[in-house]
Length: 166
Image 1: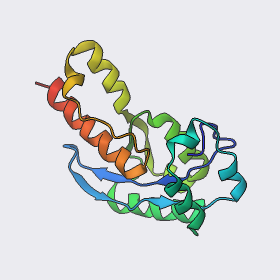
Image 2: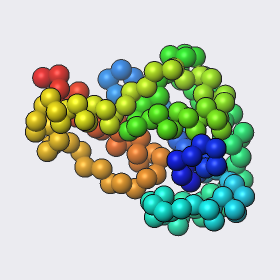
Image 3: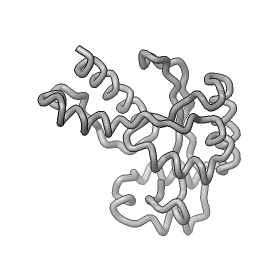
């Protein structure tokens, strides 16, 4: 995203991964790069600008995909792989993602469940209730790219499930 304000900021890149209950990947999309007017890219402020690689912004600038295009593809992907309103949104702090999806990708939003699986909440609880859990946790690369972030969240969930459910 270009920032944290759903009224002025936009989605730059998005991907989806569907897993089963055991966190096995069933299917995933490619990363989609959304094109926006140049003013959107020029108004990205710190620290968000430093988080995103120049490559990501170049991919967005070169893309022909609009929010409506991506929304249609993602919603069709979800229809293929998940029952309507049964697919929770998961990730590290997915509440902000949910807000952007609700505003800019209404077809996709209309398919996902209202509940979320927040990996960062599990991380905070694990630190408090299971001292030592973090030392073996998979290290995050902090690339801030959609598929990489999703895959890291899945790896974190697998770690917490094993450690916390011993």
